[in-house]
Length: 247
Image 1 (cartoon, rainbow, N blue to C red):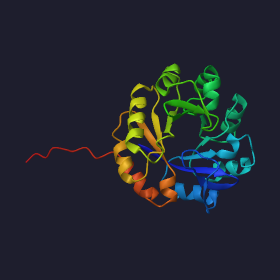
Image 2 (cartoon, rainbow, N blue to C red):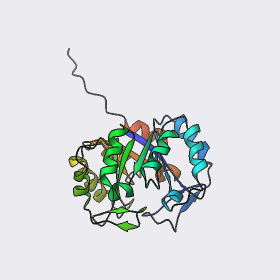
Image 3 (tube, one colour):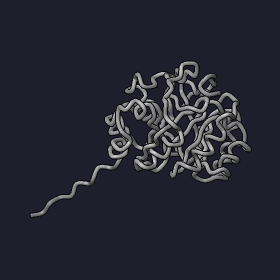
Image 4 (spheres, rainbow, N blue to C red):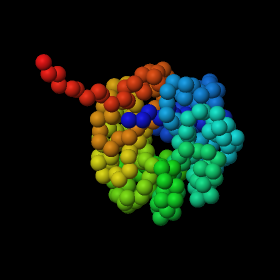
């Protein structure tokens, strides 16, 4: 299972949010570019980056995002404000390893399915769930979709992954979130990436035994130093197979 150390940007700095509330960010006083390099130095194979300004239609972080993509030393899975084909393809052209699409997928699912076919292993579907409904517009607007029917509607579209976030139970009711993620992973054609559920290495150890879970986003726990990235990466490794001993 892959661990995606996660960085969230707001006004040029690193933040984490409680249940998606942009009006109450917790600011971390670190250099985003140096932090991305630290992720790579610790052994991460990918990192995840969300630009909250872009979600609001503000491109003020654009140059910083480009610098992180250039400097990180590992591929970047980028989300935030991907509202058009041109936007998605522009970031692919500028070096993003993968692009995460949420609102655009709800508004124009056929376009996003087409993008997934045209850019193999580079389009990730975001499924953000609040009180049983898929949310759009950066967790601000509820759609008329249940997450299972929403995922099923994309059929076998070749997404690189599907990021599932249960906003309501974000870091609070982990058992409920694991249940949601497990249920959606069972019906998804693409591998599922869990978001918001990792508080400790124990949560990683539970996630890696759920079928079709390919990875987990880990952000807040790293910034709060509940665990180190090295510990997370180590726990995510598959258990060695037991070999029978013959005497």
